[in-house]
Image 1: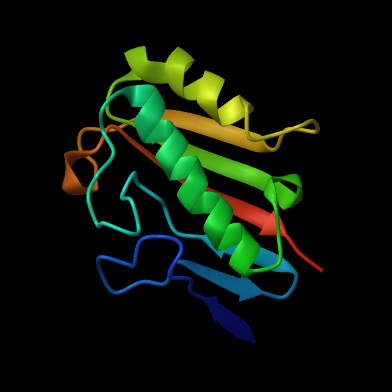
Image 2: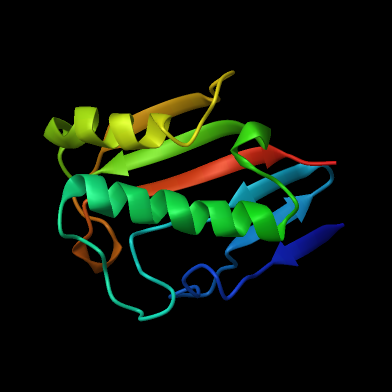
Length: 126
């Protein structure tokens, strides 16, 4: 059985998908980009600001499912430019306290709305 997770505190899906899905004790999030939920506008003033907004959006999805970043076991980071890796990594790391999740980071040709970073996660929940 699966449960759909949806919150107004993160951007609405821009296609035929859910913000997240719970299956058993695992939460699978869709990729988040730097859309500010209250305005619908992208926060792309810098790669750090963009990444911070992505992580704020992800925190809202995790919270709606009863999870936090401590529950995350796997992340996927998609970058438009691998030269942004260090800046993204610095912001990303600030959202975790310890016991970092497994992760891959890949450079891609293009992302939705021509953003620079998109992140998805898998978390274990009770």
